[in-house]
Amino acid sequence: MVVIGIPYPNAQSVELQERIKYVHNLTGAPKDAGKTFYANLAFKAVNQSIGRAIRHSQDWSAIILLDSRYGLKENMNRLPNWIKASMKSSQGFGSLIKDLAQFYHQRKRAGLSS
Picture 1 (tube, helix red, strand yellow):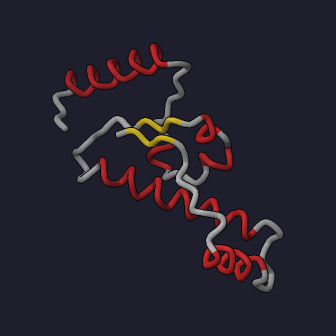
Picture 2 (picture 1 turned 180 degrees about the horizontal axis):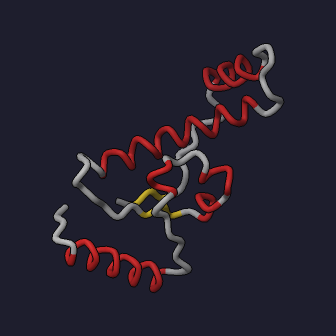
């Protein structure tokens, strides 16, 4: 599975702007609550997509998050712990292909099927 970019919702949407304004104006809300809400909407979509690649506990899949912004600490913290625990960063296409080949070879050697 490949996720290209981060699917931020349309910031120009009047409904979204009102929702962000509401979150921002909540009593006791942090100063950046609207920004956090906006980012969490995007990562909700990413996390749902990732979940579709894994159907049950014995299943496995290579998930490629194709955007350098996934490497930012604030964005990594929005990913599930089971993803963060096995995340690996590749520095270029050749490195990615090598890492994917190694990943699939390890799964095949372990007798796991997808």
